Image (cartoon, rainbow, N blue to C red; front, side, top):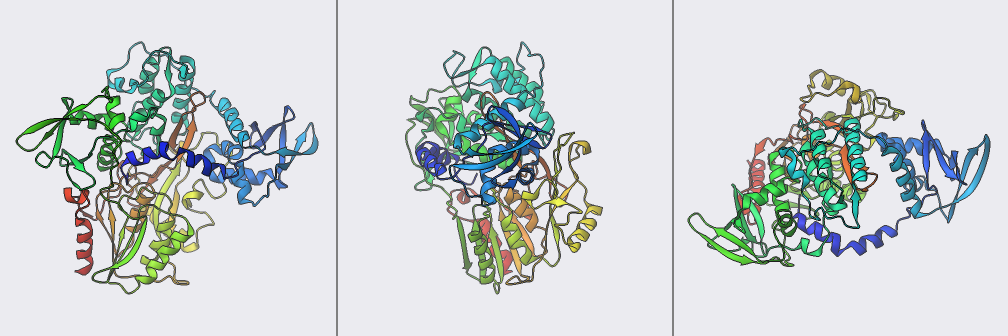
Length: 614
C-alpha cells in the first residue's frame, strides 16, 4: 500500500457524504427490475410477465450482450442488467425519463416506453443473485472446529443475537455458494494448496444461531488471505462499525530488521528518543499484534505481506480490539533500546499522522547530470496523464539517461506501459501471458478473447499485426510456464504484446533507463515492471514487486450482500513465473534503509543516478 491504510479508512467516515453526492451525479438509471436468461437471450419482466428483449433505445439487444461479454465474460448476465447504463453511455443513447424497449410477447412484437429508475439496477441485481445463489456445495457441518482454523471464528459483536444478525440458514447458504464460486470460477483456488473446504467448514461450525454481517466479513477477509492472491479479498470497510475503532496512538509503527519503531510522523524522529522501538503492548509481545494484522494480508510475496501487515498494525484501535483489548482504556506500552526498557501509559486518540514518504501524484523533471526523472503513484489511463508521459519523453530526448520511479504504485491501467515501452524497443515484445478461468460448459465465447480490457488476445487474433503474430510464434517455442493448470478449465493463452512505434513524435531512446521498484508496486505496476524489463536498455532496481495480476471480479453473497472479489485469470511473466506469489525480481536488489523508510534519504534513487552517470 502506497499510503498508510489508516488514512484511507478514515476517509470512509469523513467523506462518506461527499461520495454519496458525487455518485448521485452519475446517471445510473436502468429500465428493468428483473431479467432472466435462456441461453444468451435476455428476458425482462414487463407488465407482470417475462418477455424476450429485442431492442433498447432502438439498438439491437445483441449489441448490448456482445459488449457485456467483452467486458465480463464470466458474468456477462450481471454485466448486462446491472451496468446497462454504462453501455447506453458508450452508445451515446440520450435518456429522458423513459426509454423505448421493443420485445416479443406470445409471438407478437410490441414496444413500450419504460421508466428509467436508479433503484431498478439494484432490484435486477438482487433477483439475479437470488437465482445464482442457489448454486451451492452442500456438505456435513463438523461438530468440532479444527485448531488450524480457530482464528477464522473471531468475532467483534459476539454470539448474543441482535437485530442485525444473519440467521444460521442464511449464513450457511452464503458460505456454500461461496465455495461453489471458488470451485467453479476462481483461477487461483489451488495456488497455495489452501484447504478452503475445511476452512469454510470451521466458519460454518461456529455460526451457531447466527452472526453479524461485519463479523462474517471479518472472518471471510481472513479466509481469503490464505489463497495467496492479492486481488481476491473482502474489503475491510465492512468491518468498521464504531467511531472509536478509527482511533490511533500518537505515533506510527515502522518495522525494520525485525524491530518495531515508534515514530513521530511530524518530525520523522523516534517517539521516545532513548527508547526507539516497541516491545510490548499491555504486556503482550508486539509480534502478536503483527501476527493479528498479518492474518488479513494475502500471502503473496514476503515483502508485500510484511509491508501491508505493518500498514494494518497502524489501524491501531481496530487491530487491538480484534485482539480483545479494551480500546477505551489506557494502554501500557513498553518501549525499548538495546539494553533497557520503559513502560508508559498511552491513550488512543484522534491523532493525525503525516506520510513519511509522500510521493507526488505525478512529477517529471530533469535531475542534475542531465537525467530525466518521472514518477507517478498510480497507473493512470486518462488521456491527460498519458499525454504527460509522451511530453516527458520529448523533454528527455537528449538526456544522458532516464529514471522511471514507480515505487508504491498500487496499479490501475496498463496504458502507461503501452505509452512508454515503445520508446525503448526495436522489435515487438510479449509482456504478459494469461489464461482465463472458464466454465466447463461456456455458453458464449468473446470474439477477441476474454482479456480485451487487458490488451491481451489469443495468438491468432486479428488485433495483432503480422509481425506481432510472428513474435508470438517464436515466443511460444521457448515459453515454459512455472505453474501448471487444468487445460479443460482455462482458455488458450492470451498474449499482451507491445511494439515499437516510429510515427509522430515517437523515437527510439537508446540511453540507459532505470526503473525503481518496491513491494508497494502491485497489479498493473507488476505488469509495467516486467514489461519494461524486456527492453534491452532498461534496468530494474529496488525490491521485488508485490506480485499480483489476477483480474478479479466481484461476487455478491446473496443473503449477507458481502462482496467477495475472486480472480479469473492465471497470469504469467515473460520468464514463465507467475506474478502472484512471485513478483517481478529487479536486476539489482536494493533494500530500503531505516532512514529511507522515514523519508530522510533515498539510497535507491542515488544508486539509479550512479548507474546512469557511470
